[in-house]
Length: 278
Image 1 (cartoon, rainbow, N blue to C red):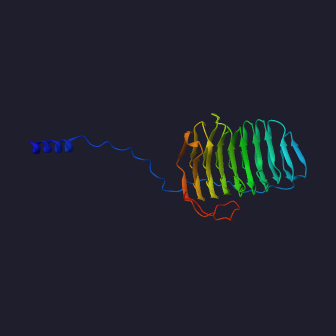
Image 2: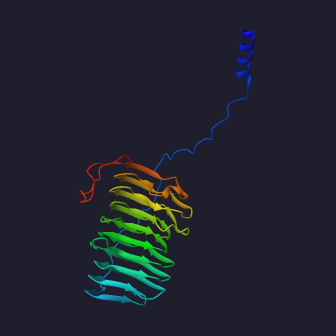
């Protein structure tokens, strides 16, 4: 009787239906994608030079150089083109339709100051610009912005690009090099449901810690990190931390290599001695 029961169970096990198939995962990319690095440029001279002043810009300007100034944008619908701001922070607050095109922001090495400060603005466009040697490259807060085709180099005091407090930002086709601690820091500490980022087609190289950091990015709208090349970061390529894990963030189709490595640039004063795995 026991032998008959054993044979029946064995037959049932062998003759049953096939095991359900697990979904086939998408293939890993086998080749590094071809992305275009925005070209570095110099401005044609002569430029109108403004130095050591507090400046208010209330209309379009072109071919200006601001040195050791403090600059405020006064009106809506202003375009700043082919100009430079050297050690001259720019403040854009509660404005609409501001455009920055082929503008150089450089050498603002002041503690916790950004070269471009954006607060409660709508439809800001920053394209084909250069941010070089600043403590912070650009800070965008409670605003909507397009950040496209720019170069961020050696903005290594406290991040190259900060997107915070309910902002909606498209960050596409930019080049980030030598950022510390992050190339892009994204925040939503106030929990605005309107916060959203789309980070695509960027090249990010040589970041002191995490290249892209979602820090306290709570309750935000669906956001996306895709088709970026991220190489040589001291910590992770993308990190989601501090209440960010409840947000709807898609990370896909990125080319990531060289994480958790010793930073190749000169040692930063705040660089940790021990690097953590990517």
